[in-house]
Image 1: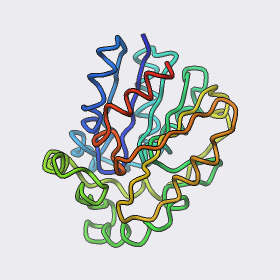
Image 2: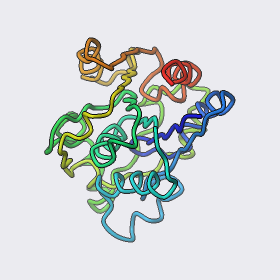
Image 3: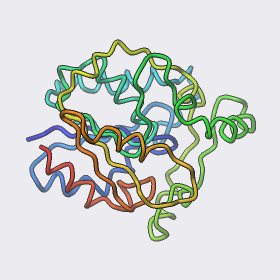
Image 4: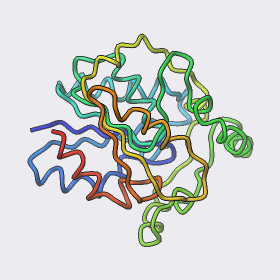
Length: 237
């Protein structure tokens, strides 16, 4: 049995992996899909204190520790790719593989979501100004390329996201590089948003322990192409 631990991206919650879960559980694996502090069903916590990237890294680190998890397949979507890199840097011996699902690839201390994807800085900063400067209002799911049949479901669950998560810089020692296997799954469908992600992921293709896949499913691959994502994950357990 493999421990699959999924970390969602901005504005989402653990719910966004609901369509991937059945295939993995039917194959006999454990699937954990926590929601990070301050979003989703935990959005009420956003006003209780500063919520930033470090908060979210510790959300996942503590889950791994308290649940005594080992040999974890740690999958991050979008913003969640920064979170899983920070987690792996702190707990490299607990992680069997890292799965980057259409998100940025941090490499060093000082990287942040806005430094890696600077095209998001202006619109999200403007959005934050309308919410008191601490939250970023969510975009509708169609902007992420979610198929029309899933949009109403996704839109009912998306929430605002703490701005500090996107501005705070990672502090990395390089320990995350000890994780022996890395999977990179990117979206090849044009959803109208410029993206460096395909080029970043293809640059990893020939590196030891790396496996690169592309899917035509929009940014939210775990919704539009859930079965294909699950099949890729099962191929590498």
